[in-house]
Image (cartoon, rainbow, N blue to C red; front, side, top):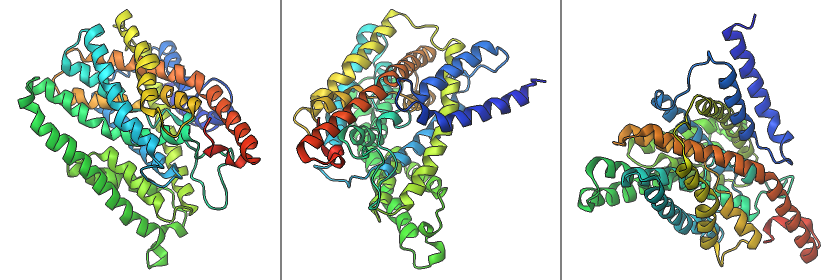
Length: 436
């Protein structure tokens, strides 16, 4: 009775069941699903001392690949969910967050790391690059829902409000666009800080070639797959006729694999591929089938990673944390990212309250864990345990801070948007396009 395997099966079944029902139960209260599973991991690994230690340093390869798969699946879901066609003006919030907020965040956090933590330049850049992107995995409470079609809008009228759209599209692209700075940190750790040693290769390969290949191959893969999905001559292989959702996973791995083989950024390719598929037959109901499969798979992987992260915290991941690390984490979450986001959106589409929400909800999560694990395996960074402690502290703090505030803030914004729309148009269905 209560032997190891049976207990594991019971816990796994309970976790999967909770992953299915918690998002609905917690929708209107200041508790998020990531908070619950992070806490469950801490509790389980504290009480059950015979569980193996989920140390990300000891199991570096497992940590890197598990988080990698979770992120690319999440990027596919984010791209498929976006209803708004790509455009310079339509996506102006996204371009501002990528072109202004992210570099400002990188610069601010790098300076904080150098000043307060006293780490070397390579480690300071690595921590900043790992934490700069808004996470596409843990930010579901503030992202768009399932794809809308021409017959049915999102049940809550929330699919295209500027906050959810801005955070989803930002998370979709900035996970890949942070990679050049991860490579910069790796180069600094290996060849030194002299610009002549790293700048030419970094600009030519890590910036221009890898980003270009990510966009090009993601677009080409998306175009090819959309033909198979929607316009194949043989009806038997036109997948949109058969509601086969698992091919979303094939799309994810194809775009990612071919791009990585050619030294491009697979993260960029997966998101571009998803957006390209969505652009073909934009209002087709098959997009919902694809998105639903990806969302469920992403949620399962997220549960596993959060429980393991909680276990790592329970077993001493944050043991080396002092007041300096806490000060950097607090300054980053409460000052650096919000201020960078606020500045970048001045004069843009979002209203004042929406601007503040987009700037504040820069959720940090599983992408940060992947970047750190990847860089530590490629570069020469002494004190890897301390870097893991710093990243773990920020991710856990973000889960709690943004998890507590997401539901109240987003519900408040939705009510304000509907009220303003009713006053302005007399029709609450205009709410998503109404800035507040």
